Image (tube, rainbow, N blue to C red; front, side, top):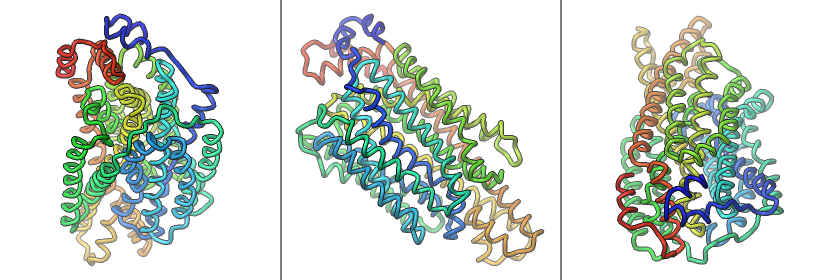
Length: 552
């Protein structure tokens, strides 16, 4: 990247000093501590998916309730990261990080011993809020402590390790479920949180390039309302007889969005700098990351249920099935960092999108009943490679587009990519799975020609686990028919979900191709942003910068 910048004229000269790599003392240990903290959040995002069938049986939960449990952690995390990112910038990133690790422990204990599905959902949201305190500060501190190519490599390792840990979560959960009750999966993060807390206390520097400007608390509350209402509205979109609630949630999201925009335009110290957010290297990367990381979470969410419900994998087998995704994310990450430096973020993002597209296409075409494992591994491998490639530029472009003192905004957005992307994609996939399953199951009941009362039909069309439980009340021959019909109905629903994933990836690729600056333009724009943010007099011609942004 240094050579590329040097060849880009005056803009490259202005940018060159910032490209000199710097790192903190004991850089490896500091990065290890930050990755350990991030691992708590990434593991928390993934542990519930394997346990969903068991949770459904324990509480006789509907598919909608299971979707809420799955998305609850993402909901709390996504709704809070922007606000907590700004709070960390002002009052201390290390302090907020440590508070988040402390709150994680009681939240996970409450989830493990939740007496009902409502308490479980609440505990998951609380755990997400705790992660929202800690997770944004990890990337913010990496940005503040590292610079140049060293920062790119650190972000690549942070992103890849986080994704791999999220992929490994189902395996760890599956092993626990083989020997313990469903709540044991939520205890996985407790010892890790304790270790991460100790490492952060000893190793992570405090008060690095933090701001003294006041926090926009009003904007923070509006951001929570906006993201929370949006995610819940998407999650309830496919629920029958909830039209009024759905309209209310989307109305709240729309009102919060309008109020948030007006507030950020008028606030002296806005929570979210709309000027910086309008930079193409920022907003396009933010949208691209939402799709990339959301695809990973959505694929794991639907995939785990497919493996257990349709292929009848055990929880351990279902967890092991995801290992190719985790392995490829770690292996590909260093190459991703090299591509960002040599070819730019746009090329690397598009290459990642190609592999994510191939992953969803594999799931849509090949994932059927009684398939061989290699078809499962192929789908997860493609997704893992794609996320490994695209994760680094999606995060790196954000942090490179804002001043270090405002990096909480960039890190919050980077975390929002994962959390909002995961929550939205899981909600959309879950809603489509729910609608597709219910429609197919209802059609199967009608086609059977048997007199099925309304109560039984409701149980059969509610979710796969509910249908499986209902089947146990009947003779073996009837059980087999009900389970077979439930599997067929599930396969109808997950086809809807995979198709949505393909559409989302294609839309994201079109956005990146046409709106993200090409490599040379990206370098010039980043140089101009760095000069502008530092208050330097030397900067590229304003008209050239404006034309580049328009062309991007």
